[in-house]
Image (tube, rainbow, N blue to C red; front, top):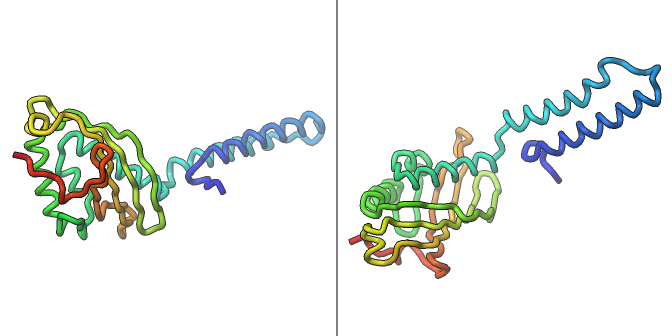
Length: 195
């Protein structure tokens, strides 16, 4: 079933249908016309827009977290990345949040990412208070960077983000799995150090 909080088009469709029905009834029964009748479709349309603007669903909050992570990673802003990582972060290689952030500082300072482009996103699970999102990205390193000279300049990666809803209703990243590199199964432990 469609959720009016996720899809305001449902209420806008109801508004259009009610406008057509009320308009037809006003033409068929002119003696029953009242000024307030045309306000009904307008009120439905305004409520649809207000619901979309004022109510943020879990899906919208997760999308905001993913977009913020992508923007921060592309700009190399570790402090912005740190705001998106849960205090109880842990993955296969990093025992805690600080180890991940230390690695991020090291990688960003030495890898010279020229461009990172999100190619696709898939929802694996979304059952509050946890969600799993899979993201495919293309990463291009600067030609004079150590990564481009040692390995190659372009990589296609897929990561899996495990998110958890916090007490303040924000969704933070609890685990990042490096799932694939260039279509091959990959993990954090296989990631070579940057020379």
